[in-house]
Length: 255
Ligand SMILES: C[S@@+](CC[C@H](N)C(=O)[O-])C[C@H]1O[C@@H](n2cnc3c(N)ncnc32)[C@H](O)[C@@H]1O
Image (tube, rainbow, N blue to C red; front, side):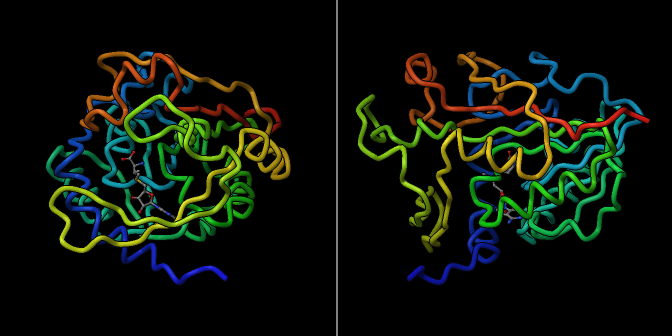
């Protein structure tokens, strides 16, 4: 039996501390801690005039960076607090970007065949019905549109918190834990889904998406500008990749 976890409430509690602690820059599109960013990797390239949807956008930093590069950007997140932060940040930076609260398993606000790019950074690990989410991504993308997303590398979760020792199974599956973070009085439970590389591939193919590249980047000192302390230190990441990036597309000719 699975325990009852309210992810919306959990992320509402976590959001203010998450933003204060990790200091995620909005000046570029990031893929993860000490991971080269989009300006460096060029997986998406020029977004001028393109419709870009970010799913699990958190505080909206990447959507804002897309908008600052000329995209028509929209972000969706489950958490009211993250969306509030994103709207305020966009206002402070005088950037036009739309932010909606919603579950990425159902992208009801987004029209079919409307997006040139769907993007996500470090969010889809929390999504239960990833099959529905990927089917929705396929629906909202224009034919030939790109779906590029990053996640914790599933093997990274096998490591003990401080050492390079295997502590957890690669086949851990679904589990929940208390989010421990500086400044948080409550320790809300969150659930995440540790899917294998093969499982992601199966789900993407099942949704009709074509896998173009899988990138397991070596760490860079700069790149994400985020503060995640020792857990994601470049030294650990020199041994095992922390991030995996999937570049996929909806098949078809671009209109
Ligand atoms: C680790 S944060 C990453 C946020 C942002 N992409 C970033 O890089 O800072 C994960 C985000 O996923 C969101 N999230 C979790 N489950 C979701 C769902 N089913 N639908 C939409 N957003 C979700 C959370 O609210 C949270 O903001």
